[in-house]
Each structure stands twice: as structure tokens, then as C-alpha cells.
Image (cartoon, rainbow, N blue to C red):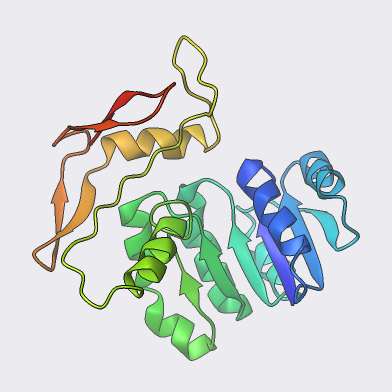
Length: 217
């Protein structure tokens, strides 16, 4: 397979590294507006499979043309570009996924379902940490039970060695991180999707040092 990774930040680096070490992946193109950053990712992965490229995600025609040389494209840029990239993927007839980060954006992507089916490709939004990896792990674990009453999911992104003053480390885009605190959260209750205000319904969780007691919301 030939895979296109759009964005050369930390998520793009992680995606490129994993893909480059997958036996069924032939080439990985890492594309960014700043081609030097794309080159830096290619150099960091240390694989002949990884090739840098320059792309402006605002240039729809250029994005479509670049996508057409690949079997799938992964958006590792900030969430507000994802609808535009998903539409480009439909036109290019290339499978597409992204890291999510905003419910309204995901809704617009899901609205492309009919067009995606007609193009013979797939759009899979929200493939980041949560939703995304956590959803896959929960589904995998749930299948191991004969009877399951409830699943409680808690997700955090804290450094192993927290340092003052915030005891935090940026690993996601700042825009996406802030959005998690201001956008209403979607939850499933009694089999129905409902929205609640973020940073509400606070609960306390206990962990080993250095985290000890922490808040979840």
C-alpha cells in the first residue's frame, strides 16, 4: 500500500513511523506546507519507505492530485481542515481517516457517506486517541466477556514525569486541546447520544505516585 500522511507534527511523525514499520506498506509520503518539517520527519523515521512532499491543504486541486497516487490518506493536521480533506479524498477516490477533535466537523464528514460510497472509498473520522485507539481497545476487551453490564472509559494525556508549573506537556495541537474543554461533550446514556457541558460531572480517581489523586470530567 501507498499511504499519504498529511501533517508533520508529532502525530504525523508517529503515524509515519508505524506505517514505515508495517510489512504491507510500500511507501509513506509525509506532506506539509513546511517541506523542511516533512523532511525532518522522514529523517527521524530512518526508513527508505518515507518520502517528504510539500502541500498546502488549502489548495484543493493540489491535494486531490497528491492523494491520487496513494491507496489511503491520513490527516494529522488540526481538525478544522478535515472536512476539506475528506471532500478531496472523495474526489480522488482514496480512503481517508483523521484524528478527529470536533463533533461538528465529524458530523460534516459523516454527511459525505453517500458520496463516499459512490466513489468506492471510506471516510473514517475520529481515529485519534479518544475516540479512536481507546474505542478499538474497549471493543477488543468487550469481546472477551460473555456478559457485560457496563464499560467505564477514562482517558488522560499526562507526562510520565510532570514538571511545574502546569505538570503538562503538549503532544496534541493547542487548538484541538482547547476545543476539548469548550465544546459540548457527546456521551451515550441509556442507548442514546446526548450532549453535556464539558468540565462538568467531576469525579476523583486515585493513581500511584506521582499522580496520586486526579480529577476526571
